[in-house]
Image (cartoon, rainbow, N blue to C red; front, side, top):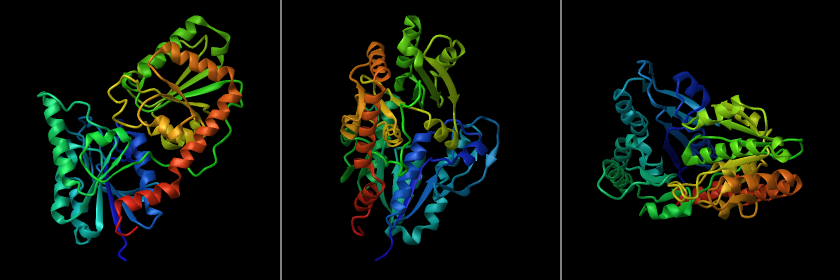
Length: 395
């Protein structure tokens, strides 16, 4: 039997590459999900490599970075070149994956190219791969939120969807079940990520309750709702809220709200803004956290077009997940999380109070979440499910 090959086309970035190239607009959550997926598929006997555009928003400096080879979580990774110049940067990314696909062309018939989300920069590589005989599948993490009408954005989204999905004849991985309506591709498999194999550290053992808000800090991720709740709690100055410690990581348009809250620390909750952390720094911070926040609004455009993969990450690390009731979160974690059924700072405060005043019960719920995530997203189980889906002829 011929060993199958998997190439994952994405924009995953190891920390050393991100820092060297001066990239600040990457998605750590996307990199983590791609890398862990590649790692568990590789463990099933599939030869796996990552093809990364290796890019971020250009800064106009004119600096040029050549293609390079590296590893992410031990998975061989080819990074495309990056030029910090307007327009030229985008044009270079259109070409970036093509040399690797051309070199692999003799094995195209036994190789599957997995496309991580729809991106215009992928289109030349996608259609070259199709012409060379590769099998293609789509890993759909985010659904298009603007498809109707005749606006420029809607037209672009429809064209991108058509050109990407027409090439992907081997089905689609979906970040949540609702995304089945966002593509006609068949077959489909909902894939929520994979849990860490490490035993989680105990939580809720200290005098304070440490909360984590990470990733994109913006209204679309519920950051403004949280900032308002912190302001209300400070005005009320109730004894229970003085034990809350909020840690904020990542970047985004709402980060300034938390910078202001951190600069005015006095009455609780205390806010600390860590900014963009590397993987080691994030893992170290995670060990100190009791509650992980996933607050994309119930009424927001992203509520049913994506799955907040960080809930699996946080639950597997032993954190209590406090999440809005969106997407497939309840399907995955069940009674192992605390939910916000509607977007209300008063409801968020009520949930935080219940967590703080009942730490033992909170720890029990966190443990349920860890067990639920492990049951759905264990490495061996997830790896074999992916292999059977992507390579049914060799499973």
